[in-house]
Image 1 (tube, rainbow, N blue to C red):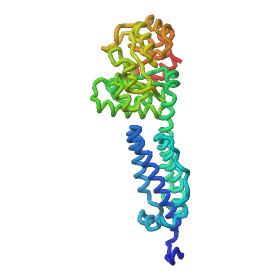
Image 2 (tube, rainbow, N blue to C red):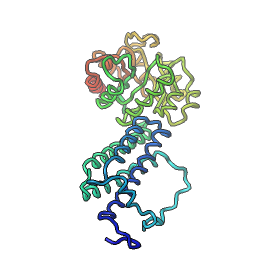
Image 3 (tube, rainbow, N blue to C red):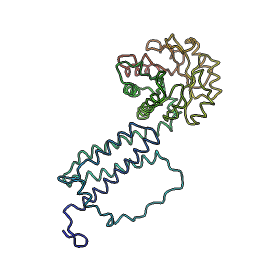
Image 4 (tube, helix red, strand yellow):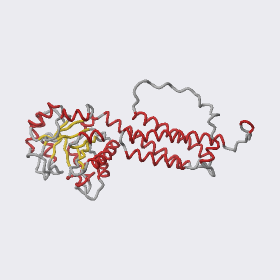
Length: 360
């Protein structure tokens, strides 16, 4: 077949150019999203998944007996009739990098769909490309969940009934992220990272990992004690003890859109937290607990007084188990924060499901 300037084009040259253009489009889109996840949103898991997906995409042969070199030989940049097509002028508004990541994921998925069709006509690995496209769809869902959680923090707080206090030490025989994921699936609406024995770099790494799990599952993620770690990990909130920073000091660090909770051990402290602007409080310990910094015993009657005395969401905490949570519910409590009763159980997800049923 005669091509431009009397040259001869191998059969399928147009298909190769189509494949080449969309391979570049898909790779570029995935790379933009990958870098936004890595450098802007601090989502190492999703960034790593996109990197792996992008490399797999580039390794798929364009067709039977064809190679990347065949694509390069068929490339015709000067002859591309759409090269100089006008594109909509960019807005002068500030760029939302999260939206940029989403748009580039869409761009990548659309391009991979074209690759599938071209590959099918060339006897290539269209099935592999289809699986890669489905993985992009899954990552799209994750980023939309992330945006959704951030936009609905107040709504999700109102709906939360079980806050899981997540610590690896209380999770023998199970990987914390996997257990947290199963507990979210079972109904835990808030996860509070509560690690006392990690150095700052380890704590931040764990916070980022759990924040991804929570975002994907539609649960709030809160960091205990550390507004700086909450800020760096893009957490939904930070929880402060009585000896931690004031709410106004913490607010200067995390900004106005992040939830702040406060541990309280009396009605007086609960009212102080409300006046300071807390979004929610923990009240306890309601029952005897081995936690050293839990504070003086509050009891069910003390919890009832706090529930009547403040209008904030109140999470009962301290010594809670499946057998005594009905007492909390009978006192008017609708929310609990638990650790060992869940993480130390043979089936954390079943335990969470049971607690949610009591509090419903």
